[in-house]
Length: 339
Image (cartoon, rainbow, N blue to C red; front, side, top):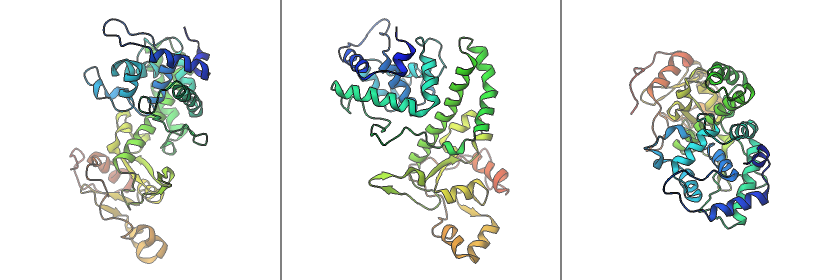
């Protein structure tokens, strides 16, 4: 049985040996699946940064997003087994292997730890002939100068995350007597930060990696420049329910200037997706050249710049922003969907 160290300090040689064993595996068509090897468990943990296993049930596991299907094929397991392993790792299922929850809590507490392990297991896979088609570099951090970075974290205040964790940790400890308080708190903090990472990725993808207010989209040497854009909540994380925190339709992609203006109530968006300025900011636009350069039209659009297929923000979040941030009367009912 693997030990804690076998996971968190996996060697290149051990990872190669485990990948070789996986390559000789045959699918299990009936009965119990073979036990997950550490490289499989660690790969599932890395994939959890991209995939929320809670989105899929037994009847929808076949629809799981990448990289789950690729991992299932490589591991000779159904998608449901990969998703179940993710559930074991975040503590939502009890029947994981020994040390798995502790491993997840340890590696997720500092993203660099998981990044280092990911590099080892991916390098070992390549060494034994597993190419990018069979195991894609889904985190894209194998270059030595690229670190594993959770995006969208600037929106989370440490005190707010701690408060949210304290609100749920008691119930967790009551339902999971097998977990100690420190491990529980680490898992809950990691869950909050990973959820924000997934939320930000989906918002950026939905909006075509472009500021919805002015259209800014910066690329450097063919890659998008992530720090030039922010994906943050319309209804702030601290006041949102757990489901609202993960809802990409509660998010907008913006350049830093327009993100701050929206978050502080200098701008708002109505039910028709039209962008409105606070009267004081509109006056400054008329009077000041520098302000006009940022908030004049152009560069500011009349309406949100959304790709044709992008789901629009939900009306209830824009209504909340009108009432609590902008301080204006909403122009659409709070329960009506935006189309």
